[in-house]
Image 1: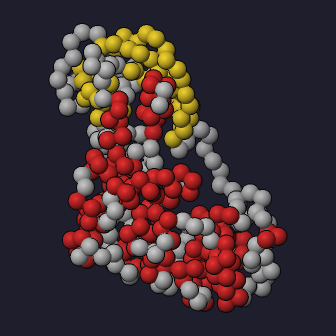
Image 2: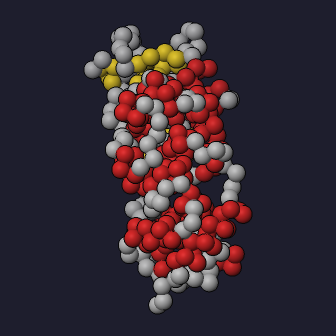
Length: 330
């Protein structure tokens, strides 16, 4: 199998991107901070989901200094519903490191970028190439698929990416073109080979690669949620203290919720509704009940009363918003 002409491939992808790129907000001026935020948000999250979150996040934290100075609760509240919350914490930690070590200016070098919290090889290459037009390779899921089909092999994707970015004229356009090609043309199923700019150089011209990985069957769960309100209409919420969703606000749920070391004894009555929610390999069916607490509640930092209109001011997983829409209609 003859290897594709690297220079030809690079030029065609750059030219295609220049004509067909989507008008995304972080492409307006390529501000390094905005490029960084976009790359973190786009990890394991679809573009259409990210766009409104990106706009709100930048409006709330318009500069890297603003993000560095923000509290974890404020950052998590702005991220609420986007999932994979460790990304938000690491992004704020990275912003603080940039302010402390680089005077508030995002570094352009891959090594310096990788020294920041939460930035790995791919993200460093994306920021360096997209924000600063540096010759840095990138390999994410979309790029890996394009490279596998183009070269007819899933082997050494980083080596292939390095060879191609070395042959390109404008790394910013080339790397974004690779990502855009994977998102719009060289899709996982039924790729649009007839309109692909590098179809003449492609070794496969089809969707045989990458070979599908065996997926674990989804784990089905049924979880009751409890809407408990006081005389002022406030909702009882539980602040998570575990490693995955630390400081996130949840509705009391399940068969036992702890309050100062004692079970929260709940009397559930009216079923308000149910809804489905997916988290990675878990398929959850939530049932929302109006409920009361039996007996006297003890004071605890674990539970707080929250005005339903203030939900957007605290960090919370997206299922809570779904439950509130059932309870309050908005």
